[in-house]
Amino acid sequence: MDGADSIGFPWSRASSVLALLALVACGRVDFDEVAHDGALIDAPAERPDAANDGRVEMDSAAPPVDAPVLTEDSPPQEGGPIDELVVGSCGDGVVAGAEECDDGNGSPGDGCSATCRLEDQGAGGESCTTARALALVPIAGGRVGAVASGDTTGASDNSSSGCGGSPGPDHIYSVTLLSPEAQLYVTVSPGPTYDVMVAIHDNVCATSGTLCCAGTGGPGFSEAYAACVVGAGTFMIVVDADTATDQAGLYTVRVESTAP
Image 1: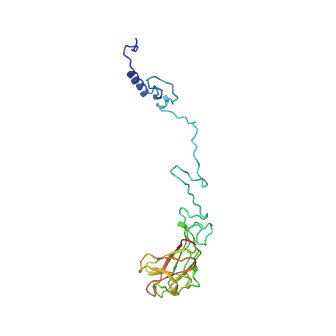
Image 2: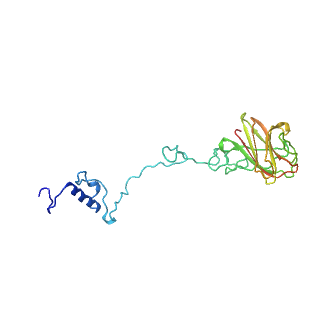
Image 3: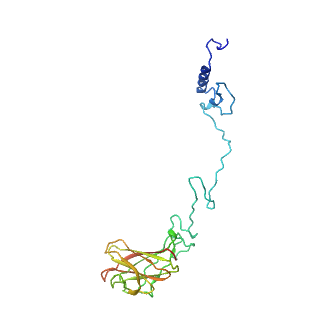
């Protein structure tokens, strides 16, 4: 009969759509095969696998997606979560990652170790003529630097400062800078009972040669810090007692410069 199915029920567009949706829900027909007018169309969609509980099996032979393989020679990657691959290598002259220094070689004993750690360059000398010359090596921030440590106990008094300081035992270091715009930063961390002072002098140890200095302010303070715009030349760094003439003890000195 026209407009009715074989069992006498009226057949409409709405009822045909409902019937097709029921078939889709049962897994009998893919939704991609249903046209907008409710008719079935052929579509190249994956078929449910009856032996796999109706789940669609993906084609394992699909071609892989090409992805770049990053190496240390790769150019910067744009548009992704990682814009640049940073690879640090001790001895390449570039301070990166966890490196404290990198002087471009793998040799120890020159202020920067074979594992790119700052090396302790030892105790200072006891006069300007025997001052320990510090090797400044490249460190982070485009600076050069050095660390050293010692114990002034039993040392002699060979220097005085133009901004205080006592006639107590002292240790003396020297650094040579080449840039006319060089700045020098010195930090001394003393032992718990050492009232320390640090002074930066020009190439003499006399009071008249004092460029800048600083003290801890008393035993137990964490550090003394002095900063000078020094320019080119050789300079003396004096670790001295700040108050009592018999004051002495352990210390660590860190020296940095904005330019060698």
